[in-house]
Length: 518
Image 1 (cartoon, one colour):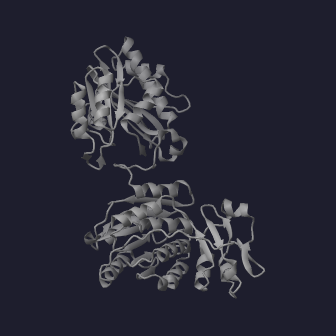
Image 2 (cartoon, helix red, strand yellow):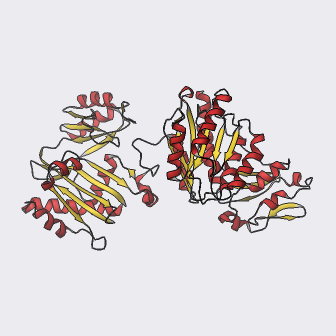
Protein backbone atom coordinates (compact mmCIF):
# COMPACT_ATOMS: atom_id res chain seq x y z
CA UNK A 1 0.00 0.00 0.00
CA UNK A 2 1.13 3.54 -0.77
CA UNK A 3 0.53 5.74 2.26
CA UNK A 4 -0.54 9.35 2.08
CA UNK A 5 0.41 12.09 4.48
CA UNK A 6 -2.33 13.58 6.63
CA UNK A 7 -2.55 16.77 4.57
CA UNK A 8 -2.97 14.71 1.38
CA UNK A 9 -5.70 12.62 2.98
CA UNK A 10 -7.53 15.71 4.14
CA UNK A 11 -7.47 17.15 0.65
CA UNK A 12 -9.27 13.99 -0.53
CA UNK A 13 -11.80 14.19 2.29
CA UNK A 14 -12.49 17.87 1.68
CA UNK A 15 -12.96 17.17 -2.02
CA UNK A 16 -15.52 14.51 -1.04
CA UNK A 17 -17.46 17.04 1.02
CA UNK A 18 -16.22 16.07 4.48
CA UNK A 19 -15.39 18.94 6.83
CA UNK A 20 -11.75 19.31 7.84
CA UNK A 21 -10.17 22.01 10.03
CA UNK A 22 -8.88 25.13 8.30
CA UNK A 23 -5.15 24.79 7.83
CA UNK A 24 -2.03 25.02 5.73
CA UNK A 25 1.07 22.94 5.05
CA UNK A 26 4.31 24.75 5.92
CA UNK A 27 8.01 24.02 5.56
CA UNK A 28 9.62 26.87 7.52
CA UNK A 29 9.08 28.49 10.94
CA UNK A 30 8.21 31.78 9.21
CA UNK A 31 5.50 30.07 7.17
CA UNK A 32 4.11 28.51 10.35
CA UNK A 33 3.88 31.94 12.01
CA UNK A 34 2.05 33.41 9.01
CA UNK A 35 -0.32 30.44 8.89
CA UNK A 36 -1.35 30.98 12.53
CA UNK A 37 -1.72 34.70 11.91
CA UNK A 38 -4.00 33.97 8.93
CA UNK A 39 -6.07 31.52 10.97
CA UNK A 40 -6.63 34.15 13.63
CA UNK A 41 -7.11 31.57 16.35
CA UNK A 42 -5.27 29.07 18.52
CA UNK A 43 -3.68 26.40 16.39
CA UNK A 44 -2.10 22.97 16.35
CA UNK A 45 1.15 22.05 14.56
CA UNK A 46 1.44 18.44 13.41
CA UNK A 47 4.47 16.75 11.89
CA UNK A 48 3.74 15.09 8.54
CA UNK A 49 5.04 11.55 8.81
CA UNK A 50 3.57 8.08 8.11
CA UNK A 51 3.20 7.32 11.80
CA UNK A 52 0.37 7.04 14.25
CA UNK A 53 0.69 8.18 17.85
CA UNK A 54 2.43 11.41 16.89
CA UNK A 55 1.38 13.10 20.14
CA UNK A 56 3.27 10.48 22.16
CA UNK A 57 6.29 11.09 19.91
CA UNK A 58 6.23 14.81 20.61
CA UNK A 59 5.08 15.60 17.09
CA UNK A 60 1.97 17.63 17.94
CA UNK A 61 2.17 21.11 19.48
CA UNK A 62 -0.61 23.51 20.49
CA UNK A 63 0.12 27.23 20.13
CA UNK A 64 -1.73 30.46 20.83
CA UNK A 65 0.28 33.04 18.89
CA UNK A 66 2.33 33.28 15.67
CA UNK A 67 5.46 33.69 17.79
CA UNK A 68 4.77 30.43 19.61
CA UNK A 69 4.12 28.75 16.25
CA UNK A 70 7.45 29.97 14.88
CA UNK A 71 9.31 28.65 17.91
CA UNK A 72 7.51 25.28 17.87
CA UNK A 73 8.05 24.87 14.11
CA UNK A 74 11.77 25.59 14.51
CA UNK A 75 11.95 22.82 17.11
CA UNK A 76 10.02 20.30 14.98
CA UNK A 77 11.29 20.85 11.44
CA UNK A 78 14.44 18.92 10.60
CA UNK A 79 14.16 16.58 13.56
CA UNK A 80 14.25 12.82 13.13
CA UNK A 81 11.20 10.90 14.34
CA UNK A 82 11.88 7.19 14.06
CA UNK A 83 12.69 6.71 10.34
CA UNK A 84 11.51 10.15 9.25
CA UNK A 85 13.14 13.53 8.99
CA UNK A 86 10.35 16.09 9.47
CA UNK A 87 10.13 18.26 6.37
CA UNK A 88 6.53 19.51 6.56
CA UNK A 89 4.06 20.58 9.22
CA UNK A 90 0.30 20.88 9.01
CA UNK A 91 -0.86 24.01 10.82
CA UNK A 92 -4.59 23.86 11.66
CA UNK A 93 -7.13 25.72 13.71
CA UNK A 94 -7.66 24.25 17.16
CA UNK A 95 -11.14 22.73 17.39
CA UNK A 96 -13.32 22.85 20.47
CA UNK A 97 -13.94 19.13 20.75
CA UNK A 98 -16.85 17.71 22.65
CA UNK A 99 -16.59 14.06 21.58
CA UNK A 100 -14.28 11.80 19.60
CA UNK A 101 -15.39 8.99 17.26
CA UNK A 102 -13.77 6.68 14.71
CA UNK A 103 -14.76 6.03 11.08
CA UNK A 104 -12.98 3.88 8.53
CA UNK A 105 -13.23 1.74 5.44
CA UNK A 106 -10.85 -1.15 4.75
CA UNK A 107 -10.66 -4.07 2.33
CA UNK A 108 -11.68 -7.31 4.02
CA UNK A 109 -9.46 -9.77 2.13
CA UNK A 110 -11.30 -12.78 3.56
CA UNK A 111 -14.74 -11.60 2.44
CA UNK A 112 -13.31 -9.80 -0.62
CA UNK A 113 -15.45 -6.77 0.15
CA UNK A 114 -15.02 -3.27 1.56
CA UNK A 115 -15.75 -3.14 5.28
CA UNK A 116 -17.10 0.02 6.91
CA UNK A 117 -16.01 0.37 10.53
CA UNK A 118 -17.48 2.92 12.95
CA UNK A 119 -16.82 3.38 16.64
CA UNK A 120 -18.57 5.57 19.18
CA UNK A 121 -15.12 6.00 20.73
CA UNK A 122 -12.06 7.48 19.03
CA UNK A 123 -8.64 8.91 19.63
CA UNK A 124 -6.90 5.56 20.09
CA UNK A 125 -6.22 2.61 17.79
CA UNK A 126 -9.32 0.80 16.54
CA UNK A 127 -7.75 -2.53 17.53
CA UNK A 128 -7.48 -1.34 21.14
CA UNK A 129 -11.08 -0.07 21.10
CA UNK A 130 -12.35 -3.36 19.67
CA UNK A 131 -10.48 -5.31 22.34
CA UNK A 132 -11.51 -3.23 25.34
CA UNK A 133 -14.91 -1.90 24.20
CA UNK A 134 -16.40 -4.33 21.63
CA UNK A 135 -19.90 -2.87 22.09
CA UNK A 136 -18.65 0.47 20.77
CA UNK A 137 -17.83 -1.01 17.33
CA UNK A 138 -20.14 -1.22 14.33
CA UNK A 139 -19.15 -2.97 11.07
CA UNK A 140 -20.84 -3.41 7.70
CA UNK A 141 -19.69 -5.20 4.54
CA UNK A 142 -20.49 -3.13 1.46
CA UNK A 143 -21.98 -4.52 -1.74
CA UNK A 144 -19.76 -2.76 -4.29
CA UNK A 145 -22.56 -2.64 -6.86
CA UNK A 146 -24.93 -0.96 -4.42
CA UNK A 147 -22.36 1.21 -2.70
CA UNK A 148 -22.90 2.80 0.68
CA UNK A 149 -25.59 5.50 0.40
CA UNK A 150 -26.52 7.78 3.28
CA UNK A 151 -29.71 5.91 4.12
CA UNK A 152 -27.63 2.77 4.78
CA UNK A 153 -25.35 4.74 7.07
CA UNK A 154 -28.34 6.27 8.90
CA UNK A 155 -29.83 2.86 9.53
CA UNK A 156 -26.59 1.61 11.05
CA UNK A 157 -25.80 4.68 13.13
CA UNK A 158 -29.31 4.97 14.53
CA UNK A 159 -28.72 1.62 16.24
CA UNK A 160 -25.95 3.28 18.24
CA UNK A 161 -28.33 5.96 19.55
CA UNK A 162 -27.47 8.80 17.18
CA UNK A 163 -30.43 10.90 16.07
CA UNK A 164 -31.54 14.25 14.71
CA UNK A 165 -29.13 16.59 12.95
CA UNK A 166 -26.11 14.76 14.33
CA UNK A 167 -27.32 11.50 12.79
CA UNK A 168 -27.68 13.22 9.42
CA UNK A 169 -24.19 14.75 9.59
CA UNK A 170 -22.50 11.53 10.68
CA UNK A 171 -24.33 9.49 8.03
CA UNK A 172 -23.31 11.93 5.33
CA UNK A 173 -19.67 11.83 6.51
CA UNK A 174 -19.55 8.03 6.59
CA UNK A 175 -21.11 7.71 3.13
CA UNK A 176 -18.74 10.31 1.67
CA UNK A 177 -15.77 8.55 3.26
CA UNK A 178 -16.72 5.37 1.40
CA UNK A 179 -17.10 7.31 -1.86
CA UNK A 180 -13.61 8.77 -1.45
CA UNK A 181 -12.28 5.30 -0.60
CA UNK A 182 -13.67 3.92 -3.87
CA UNK A 183 -12.71 6.87 -6.02
CA UNK A 184 -9.04 6.69 -5.06
CA UNK A 185 -8.76 2.87 -4.98
CA UNK A 186 -7.77 2.89 -1.33
CA UNK A 187 -6.92 -0.19 0.69
CA UNK A 188 -7.78 1.67 3.87
CA UNK A 189 -9.18 5.09 4.75
CA UNK A 190 -9.78 6.07 8.34
CA UNK A 191 -10.71 9.18 10.25
CA UNK A 192 -9.46 9.05 13.80
CA UNK A 193 -10.62 11.03 15.53
CA UNK A 194 -13.82 12.00 13.81
CA UNK A 195 -14.87 14.76 16.18
CA UNK A 196 -18.07 16.47 17.23
CA UNK A 197 -17.38 20.06 18.23
CA UNK A 198 -19.11 22.07 20.92
CA UNK A 199 -21.05 23.76 18.12
CA UNK A 200 -22.38 20.38 16.96
CA UNK A 201 -20.29 20.23 13.77
CA UNK A 202 -18.57 17.05 12.55
CA UNK A 203 -14.91 17.28 11.48
CA UNK A 204 -12.18 14.89 10.35
CA UNK A 205 -9.51 15.88 12.86
CA UNK A 206 -7.00 13.33 11.59
CA UNK A 207 -6.92 10.82 8.74
CA UNK A 208 -4.83 7.95 7.43
CA UNK A 209 -5.30 6.80 3.82
CA UNK A 210 -3.37 4.11 1.94
CA UNK A 211 -3.77 3.55 -1.81
CA UNK A 212 -3.62 0.13 -3.47
CA UNK A 213 -0.17 -0.31 -5.04
CA UNK A 214 -1.62 -1.52 -8.31
CA UNK A 215 -3.91 1.50 -8.66
CA UNK A 216 -1.33 4.22 -8.09
CA UNK A 217 -0.83 4.70 -11.84
CA UNK A 218 -4.48 5.76 -12.11
CA UNK A 219 -3.95 8.65 -9.70
CA UNK A 220 -0.98 10.76 -10.82
CA UNK A 221 -2.64 13.74 -9.12
CA UNK A 222 -1.65 12.25 -5.74
CA UNK A 223 2.05 12.61 -6.55
CA UNK A 224 2.97 9.21 -5.12
CA UNK A 225 6.63 8.65 -5.98
CA UNK A 226 6.77 4.95 -5.21
CA UNK A 227 3.96 2.43 -4.78
CA UNK A 228 5.39 0.46 -1.89
CA UNK A 229 4.38 0.06 1.73
CA UNK A 230 7.20 1.74 3.62
CA UNK A 231 7.39 2.91 7.21
CA UNK A 232 9.60 5.78 6.03
CA UNK A 233 10.09 7.93 2.93
CA UNK A 234 11.74 6.03 0.06
CA UNK A 235 15.46 6.50 -0.44
CA UNK A 236 16.83 8.04 -3.61
CA UNK A 237 18.04 4.64 -4.80
CA UNK A 238 14.64 3.07 -4.12
CA UNK A 239 13.00 5.75 -6.25
CA UNK A 240 15.40 4.99 -9.09
CA UNK A 241 14.69 1.26 -8.76
CA UNK A 242 10.94 1.76 -8.69
CA UNK A 243 11.04 3.58 -12.03
CA UNK A 244 12.50 0.41 -13.55
CA UNK A 245 9.56 -1.66 -12.33
CA UNK A 246 7.04 1.05 -13.11
CA UNK A 247 8.04 1.16 -16.77
CA UNK A 248 8.66 -2.56 -17.37
CA UNK A 249 6.08 -5.13 -16.28
CA UNK A 250 7.96 -8.17 -17.62
CA UNK A 251 8.53 -10.12 -14.44
CA UNK A 252 9.00 -8.55 -11.03
CA UNK A 253 11.69 -6.26 -9.67
CA UNK A 254 11.50 -5.22 -6.03
CA UNK A 255 14.26 -3.26 -4.31
CA UNK A 256 14.29 -2.23 -0.67
CA UNK A 257 17.25 -0.77 1.21
CA UNK A 258 17.80 -2.08 4.71
CA UNK A 259 20.49 0.51 5.30
CA UNK A 260 21.22 3.56 3.17
CA UNK A 261 24.97 3.65 3.78
CA UNK A 262 26.46 0.20 4.50
CA UNK A 263 29.44 0.15 6.84
CA UNK A 264 32.12 -2.29 5.57
CA UNK A 265 33.13 -3.43 9.06
CA UNK A 266 29.58 -4.62 9.71
CA UNK A 267 29.60 -7.32 7.00
CA UNK A 268 26.98 -5.87 4.67
CA UNK A 269 26.35 -7.66 1.37
CA UNK A 270 24.14 -7.00 -1.63
CA UNK A 271 21.26 -9.49 -1.64
CA UNK A 272 19.50 -10.55 -4.84
CA UNK A 273 16.63 -13.02 -4.45
CA UNK A 274 14.17 -14.64 -6.84
CA UNK A 275 10.83 -15.65 -5.34
CA UNK A 276 9.54 -14.93 -1.85
CA UNK A 277 9.94 -18.19 0.07
CA UNK A 278 13.30 -19.14 -1.43
CA UNK A 279 14.60 -15.63 -0.88
CA UNK A 280 13.65 -15.76 2.79
CA UNK A 281 15.52 -19.05 3.26
CA UNK A 282 18.51 -17.63 1.44
CA UNK A 283 18.48 -14.52 3.62
CA UNK A 284 18.46 -16.72 6.72
CA UNK A 285 21.45 -18.62 5.35
CA UNK A 286 23.63 -15.52 4.91
CA UNK A 287 22.48 -13.98 8.19
CA UNK A 288 23.49 -17.20 9.96
CA UNK A 289 26.99 -16.76 8.50
CA UNK A 290 27.36 -13.37 10.16
CA UNK A 291 26.46 -11.22 7.16
CA UNK A 292 24.05 -8.29 7.17
CA UNK A 293 21.71 -7.44 4.32
CA UNK A 294 22.24 -4.01 2.76
CA UNK A 295 19.18 -4.47 0.57
CA UNK A 296 16.45 -6.92 -0.29
CA UNK A 297 15.94 -7.39 -4.02
CA UNK A 298 13.65 -9.77 -5.86
CA UNK A 299 13.65 -10.46 -9.61
CA UNK A 300 11.15 -13.21 -10.31
CA UNK A 301 8.30 -14.07 -12.67
CA UNK A 302 10.74 -14.68 -15.56
CA UNK A 303 12.11 -11.15 -16.05
CA UNK A 304 14.23 -10.40 -19.14
CA UNK A 305 17.98 -10.21 -18.85
CA UNK A 306 17.76 -6.43 -19.17
CA UNK A 307 15.69 -6.18 -15.98
CA UNK A 308 18.08 -8.40 -14.01
CA UNK A 309 20.94 -6.27 -15.34
CA UNK A 310 19.29 -3.10 -14.05
CA UNK A 311 18.64 -4.73 -10.68
CA UNK A 312 22.31 -5.71 -10.38
CA UNK A 313 23.48 -2.21 -11.35
CA UNK A 314 21.29 -0.71 -8.64
CA UNK A 315 22.51 -3.19 -6.02
CA UNK A 316 26.07 -2.35 -7.03
CA UNK A 317 25.34 1.34 -6.45
CA UNK A 318 25.69 0.70 -2.70
CA UNK A 319 29.19 1.47 -1.45
CA UNK A 320 30.55 -0.51 1.45
CA UNK A 321 29.20 -3.97 0.61
CA UNK A 322 31.74 -6.80 0.76
CA UNK A 323 29.91 -9.45 -1.26
CA UNK A 324 27.05 -10.15 -3.67
CA UNK A 325 24.69 -13.04 -3.00
CA UNK A 326 21.96 -14.20 -5.38
CA UNK A 327 19.68 -17.08 -4.47
CA UNK A 328 16.03 -17.90 -5.01
CA UNK A 329 13.81 -20.92 -4.58
CA UNK A 330 16.05 -23.34 -6.46
CA UNK A 331 13.13 -24.57 -8.56
CA UNK A 332 12.23 -21.30 -10.27
CA UNK A 333 10.26 -21.62 -13.49
CA UNK A 334 12.06 -18.68 -15.06
CA UNK A 335 14.77 -19.07 -17.67
CA UNK A 336 17.86 -18.68 -15.54
CA UNK A 337 20.18 -17.95 -18.45
CA UNK A 338 18.46 -14.54 -18.61
CA UNK A 339 19.48 -13.89 -15.01
CA UNK A 340 23.03 -15.04 -15.72
CA UNK A 341 23.40 -12.75 -18.74
CA UNK A 342 22.03 -9.76 -16.88
CA UNK A 343 24.36 -10.32 -13.95
CA UNK A 344 27.40 -10.87 -16.16
CA UNK A 345 26.85 -7.66 -18.14
CA UNK A 346 26.48 -5.65 -14.93
CA UNK A 347 29.51 -7.24 -13.26
CA UNK A 348 31.75 -6.71 -16.29
CA UNK A 349 30.71 -3.08 -16.73
CA UNK A 350 31.33 -2.32 -13.06
CA UNK A 351 34.48 -4.47 -12.92
CA UNK A 352 33.46 -5.67 -9.48
CA UNK A 353 36.25 -6.85 -7.19
CA UNK A 354 34.10 -8.30 -4.41
CA UNK A 355 33.12 -11.98 -4.58
CA UNK A 356 29.70 -13.03 -5.87
CA UNK A 357 27.97 -16.35 -5.21
CA UNK A 358 25.01 -16.87 -7.52
CA UNK A 359 22.58 -19.73 -6.96
CA UNK A 360 20.44 -19.81 -10.10
CA UNK A 361 18.42 -22.98 -9.61
CA UNK A 362 15.55 -23.65 -11.98
CA UNK A 363 14.92 -23.87 -15.72
CA UNK A 364 18.11 -23.94 -17.79
CA UNK A 365 20.27 -23.67 -14.67
CA UNK A 366 23.06 -25.63 -16.39
CA UNK A 367 23.20 -23.05 -19.16
CA UNK A 368 23.11 -20.24 -16.60
CA UNK A 369 26.03 -21.71 -14.65
CA UNK A 370 27.95 -22.22 -17.90
CA UNK A 371 27.48 -18.52 -18.76
CA UNK A 372 28.76 -17.48 -15.33
CA UNK A 373 31.80 -19.74 -15.62
CA UNK A 374 32.57 -18.55 -19.16
CA UNK A 375 32.53 -14.87 -18.33
CA UNK A 376 34.00 -15.05 -14.81
CA UNK A 377 37.50 -14.67 -16.26
CA UNK A 378 36.58 -11.16 -17.44
CA UNK A 379 35.50 -10.07 -13.95
CA UNK A 380 38.14 -9.09 -11.33
CA UNK A 381 36.17 -10.51 -8.39
CA UNK A 382 35.65 -14.22 -7.78
CA UNK A 383 32.33 -15.35 -9.29
CA UNK A 384 30.76 -18.74 -8.58
CA UNK A 385 27.51 -20.18 -9.95
CA UNK A 386 25.40 -22.93 -8.39
CA UNK A 387 22.11 -24.72 -9.04
CA UNK A 388 19.17 -26.30 -7.28
CA UNK A 389 21.19 -29.13 -5.75
CA UNK A 390 23.39 -26.67 -3.88
CA UNK A 391 21.66 -25.50 -0.72
CA UNK A 392 21.45 -21.83 0.33
CA UNK A 393 23.50 -22.77 3.40
CA UNK A 394 26.30 -24.19 1.26
CA UNK A 395 26.29 -21.15 -1.02
CA UNK A 396 26.30 -18.76 1.94
CA UNK A 397 29.27 -20.61 3.41
CA UNK A 398 31.07 -20.29 0.06
CA UNK A 399 30.51 -16.54 0.06
CA UNK A 400 31.91 -16.32 3.57
CA UNK A 401 35.01 -18.27 2.52
CA UNK A 402 35.52 -16.12 -0.57
CA UNK A 403 35.14 -12.88 1.38
CA UNK A 404 37.77 -13.97 3.90
CA UNK A 405 40.09 -15.40 1.25
CA UNK A 406 39.90 -12.17 -0.74
CA UNK A 407 40.89 -10.05 2.23
CA UNK A 408 37.41 -8.61 2.78
CA UNK A 409 37.58 -6.19 -0.13
CA UNK A 410 35.07 -3.37 -0.04
CA UNK A 411 32.97 -2.54 -3.09
CA UNK A 412 33.68 0.81 -4.67
CA UNK A 413 30.87 2.39 -6.65
CA UNK A 414 32.06 3.43 -10.10
CA UNK A 415 30.61 6.20 -12.25
CA UNK A 416 28.35 5.13 -15.09
CA UNK A 417 30.37 5.24 -18.31
CA UNK A 418 28.37 6.94 -21.01
CA UNK A 419 28.42 4.94 -24.24
CA UNK A 420 29.27 6.85 -27.39
CA UNK A 421 28.26 4.92 -30.51
CA UNK A 422 30.77 4.96 -33.35
CA UNK A 423 29.94 7.12 -36.37
CA UNK A 424 27.44 5.43 -38.64
CA UNK A 425 26.67 2.61 -36.20
CA UNK A 426 23.71 0.44 -37.12
CA UNK A 427 21.09 0.64 -34.37
CA UNK A 428 17.52 -0.12 -33.48
CA UNK A 429 15.27 0.51 -30.51
CA UNK A 430 14.12 -2.21 -28.14
CA UNK A 431 11.34 -2.02 -25.56
CA UNK A 432 13.52 -0.35 -22.90
CA UNK A 433 16.83 0.30 -24.63
CA UNK A 434 18.73 0.40 -27.89
CA UNK A 435 21.08 -1.99 -29.73
CA UNK A 436 24.16 -0.60 -31.47
CA UNK A 437 26.21 -2.63 -33.97
CA UNK A 438 29.52 -1.38 -35.38
CA UNK A 439 29.46 -2.92 -38.87
CA UNK A 440 33.03 -1.77 -39.51
CA UNK A 441 34.16 -4.36 -36.95
CA UNK A 442 31.76 -6.99 -38.30
CA UNK A 443 33.42 -6.80 -41.69
CA UNK A 444 36.57 -8.40 -40.27
CA UNK A 445 34.68 -11.06 -38.27
CA UNK A 446 34.36 -14.61 -39.58
CA UNK A 447 32.25 -15.83 -36.67
CA UNK A 448 28.48 -15.95 -36.78
CA UNK A 449 27.93 -16.49 -33.09
CA UNK A 450 25.99 -13.27 -32.52
CA UNK A 451 23.16 -14.23 -34.85
CA UNK A 452 23.21 -17.88 -33.81
CA UNK A 453 22.89 -16.78 -30.15
CA UNK A 454 19.72 -14.86 -31.04
CA UNK A 455 17.32 -17.78 -30.61
CA UNK A 456 14.27 -15.56 -31.14
CA UNK A 457 15.26 -14.81 -34.74
CA UNK A 458 15.58 -11.07 -34.24
CA UNK A 459 18.88 -10.85 -36.14
CA UNK A 460 20.03 -12.16 -39.51
CA UNK A 461 23.10 -11.77 -41.70
CA UNK A 462 22.92 -9.48 -44.70
CA UNK A 463 26.07 -8.96 -46.73
CA UNK A 464 27.98 -10.56 -43.88
CA UNK A 465 26.65 -8.11 -41.29
CA UNK A 466 24.09 -8.67 -38.52
CA UNK A 467 20.90 -6.68 -39.09
CA UNK A 468 17.28 -6.90 -38.00
CA UNK A 469 15.33 -9.86 -39.30
CA UNK A 470 12.12 -8.21 -38.14
CA UNK A 471 10.78 -4.69 -38.53
CA UNK A 472 12.03 -1.87 -36.30
CA UNK A 473 8.48 -1.49 -35.00
CA UNK A 474 8.36 -5.15 -33.91
CA UNK A 475 11.71 -4.83 -32.15
CA UNK A 476 10.60 -1.69 -30.31
CA UNK A 477 7.34 -3.33 -29.23
CA UNK A 478 9.24 -6.10 -27.48
CA UNK A 479 9.89 -8.85 -30.01
CA UNK A 480 13.52 -8.26 -29.21
CA UNK A 481 13.38 -9.60 -25.67
CA UNK A 482 16.64 -7.89 -24.61
CA UNK A 483 18.16 -11.28 -23.76
CA UNK A 484 21.69 -9.78 -24.23
CA UNK A 485 22.84 -12.98 -25.98
CA UNK A 486 24.13 -11.20 -29.11
CA UNK A 487 26.26 -8.72 -27.15
CA UNK A 488 27.87 -11.38 -24.99
CA UNK A 489 28.51 -13.69 -27.94
CA UNK A 490 30.19 -10.85 -29.84
CA UNK A 491 32.24 -10.04 -26.73
CA UNK A 492 33.51 -13.62 -26.59
CA UNK A 493 34.48 -13.45 -30.25
CA UNK A 494 36.73 -10.54 -29.29
CA UNK A 495 35.19 -7.94 -31.56
CA UNK A 496 32.94 -6.03 -29.13
CA UNK A 497 30.96 -4.76 -32.08
CA UNK A 498 27.59 -5.01 -30.34
CA UNK A 499 26.54 -2.85 -27.42
CA UNK A 500 23.07 -2.87 -25.84
CA UNK A 501 22.32 0.38 -24.09
CA UNK A 502 19.92 -0.09 -21.16
CA UNK A 503 19.46 3.29 -19.47
CA UNK A 504 18.52 3.59 -15.80
CA UNK A 505 17.21 7.15 -15.31
CA UNK A 506 18.83 8.92 -12.39
CA UNK A 507 21.48 6.28 -11.66
CA UNK A 508 24.40 8.09 -13.30
CA UNK A 509 23.69 11.22 -11.24
CA UNK A 510 23.25 9.14 -8.09
CA UNK A 511 26.58 7.36 -8.57
CA UNK A 512 28.34 10.62 -9.32
CA UNK A 513 27.11 11.98 -6.01
CA UNK A 514 28.15 8.80 -4.18
CA UNK A 515 31.67 8.86 -5.62
CA UNK A 516 32.10 12.52 -4.69
CA UNK A 517 31.04 11.78 -1.13
CA UNK A 518 33.75 9.13 -1.01
